[in-house]
Length: 359
Image 1 (tube, rainbow, N blue to C red):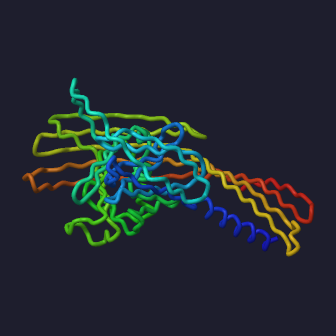
Image 2: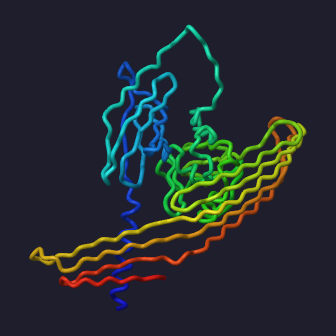
């Protein structure tokens, strides 16, 4: 019996690894003159237009998106000066290479001029890529770790590990300051930080010399919102999301700015009940090709996470290039494990046995 239990656990681990196999989508973007276009935001969308992941084309116009999970998706290419273009793609556990995509230049109308001001989702600068969090509406109601999952070049694994353009050892900064947290604690903190408290994310795969050499895999600088309007100001937000189970996120941001001193308070609280289904299906045959056993198992996991956090502090602007301040940050993460339910069906030599288990 103990040996059989060990075999089941081993097969479950193999199935879990299979769930996180990642399928890549790659392609190239060119213009009307057959020249590659760099810096084109390429987004992977669900059928309901929810953005799952975004990538940027390089100098050769090439891009690559890594996405786990089979199904039908949309690809959106939205570059300044070119018409939006949508493509459909089907993922079936195999790398997908798209045909060369040629963008059409947008028509120029001079009869009427309308000037609007809106931040783009991504901005390419000399030494970094800047992601404006509020520019993507699907970031509303999510947390900082989920925002990073959609950020170009950033990968977040199932354990909360963060890589930048395939390189580990990334230095994570909050408002230009290191967090001094372990990888597990950092992932927990980012899950407790609502996206409404974020202003922008800076990605530096080749960071300037002023940053710590510990970030040999690059630097990700997460900047939170701070108002520069004089006097007292603040904002309060709340969101509700519904998937298999509902989740809520509440946050409050307050500032008092005098021109030389900025005092701030950020607080947030979220409750999230997750759902995860793990299916294992294995069939075994003998040397003659006859079925000897069939193993099928379905597991359901429903953990509940509660994540409160609060940050209070002040900044004193001594000169345009010198600022000193102090801040206190406190977060907690509580997880209540709901018993896992699974159904197991084993067939040996044509005999079916159905076992219902509850842990």
